[in-house]
Every structure is written in structure tokens, then in C-alpha cells.
Image (spheres, rainbow, N blue to C red):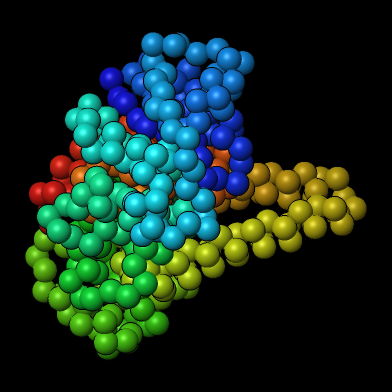
Length: 329
């Protein structure tokens, strides 16, 4: 039986939407127990209108809420009764709980996971996400925004954790690891990139394929893209923004189409693209380098996102991602 905590607070959608997503997952899976962390009234009022197996839905009542305005470091002292902090504490203290899903303040999630759940072998925790590629699969981007300033040893750690994550997602048994740079040539990049390139090149346990430019990150020629959080976040936001722009342009073409068959063809293509680039249906980004599975869903997460994120935690738990990372770091 898999057990997952869902923090219902902090997202753009109301907590009831998050609760509905968790219940959707429970009703789909007979191997799942969810623990809803949040305000007692909100949880009870929402559950009162839903059908679900009561023996597989537990609650952790917490009256405080962590908002996006809260300083990540202050949350540990000032929001001790929040669903985020109490959820992380429960995760840390219970061996039978596989992971937690959060939709709120990214910095607060990262800090609380680091200091409460704890780091793996003193490594630098990082944030990783999946990017759709042109070969029909996914590539892992790590770091996508957690660590703006990095050292060579941090990027080496990201590479090790990223390849274990790619294995756990069944992307590849021997993931190809690339380093994000401003050119594919070995000598391209800033000092951090050039130094890290040389270190990765010498490692026998990493299938390093060299540098990758931003324009080739979605080619599918590499399975893991390693970057500091500054450049990685720019790449992620650029991919999201470009996808939205293309889809909007195609919708405009449908509205302007005079031929019905042409409009239908464009609509089919839009549907395929939206399914591929629908980050809500893919689950959340994961914090790698902590002792339990911590997923950070997008702030606009809806019930579909939460349901998919729960599936993701269950799959990663079954594939023993945390144990693999501990062995590789």
C-alpha cells in the first residue's frame, strides 16, 4: 500500500480543487492511502460532498497557511503549525509514508524539505522536471530553478541524481547526460560550465555526451540536461512560453480558417500539442537530494495535476528512486 501526503494549501486554485484531485487518485487506485493536510473545516466540508473509501483517506489538520509572500527561511520558525511544515515533519517521522505533494511557495517547499526531511549524504538538493522532446519521450532538466549560484560539485551531484531519476521514470537504462551551455563545443560556456564539462568527461559512471545548446534541448538526443538553476529556469520558462504562444497562434488560425476540413486538421494538431505540453497532466517537479519523495506541483495545479502527481510518487516509490540516489551520491 502506498501512502502520500497532499498539502492542500498555497496554490492558485482553492484547496477543494486539490482535495478533489487526491480523491480522484484514491478512487482510481486500490493500493493508495492519501493524507490531506490543511484546515479541518475546509477538508471536512469538501469531503462531505465526495464519494470515496473512508478507510484510505486520512487527515492532518493544520490551521496555518504558507503563502507566496512568506520568506522561505522564516516559515520554519513562524509557520510551525502550517500544513507544509507539519506535513514535512510527518513525512520525515513515518517510514510508511512515501512522499508529499505541495503546490505552494517553491522556496519554502525546498527549505522545509532540506531541513526537515533532510539531505542525502549532505548533497545540494535540486529541482528537476520533465521536458517533452521531439522523439516522443521526455528529457530531464536539473536544476530548473532551485539553485541560482552553483559550484562544479553541485552540478556533478545534479548529474548523478538526474540520471537516477531518468532511470526511475523508465526513460533509459543508461541515460545520456548533457551540460547546458551556449555552444556544443567543449570550450564553450562560462568557467563553471567548462570546469564541470571536464569533470563529467572523466567520469566512468556517467554517460556524458557533452554540451547541449538551448535550441537542441528538446531534440531527444540527451536524456538528462544539467544546469545551474538560473539558466535552467530560463530554459524551462522559455519552453513553457513558446508552447503557449504556438498553441495560441494555431487557435487563431482555426478562427480564421474558411475551409472546414482545414479547421478540423488544425484542431487535431492543437489537441496533440496541448496533450504533449500540458504540464498539469504530467505531475510535478521533484526535489532531488532529500530523504523522501517531495513533489512540487505548479501553482496553477488543478485536480488533474494532483492526481497525476500522486501517480508519479507511487511509481517513483515502486522504482526505489531514493535508494538509488543514496547509492549514487
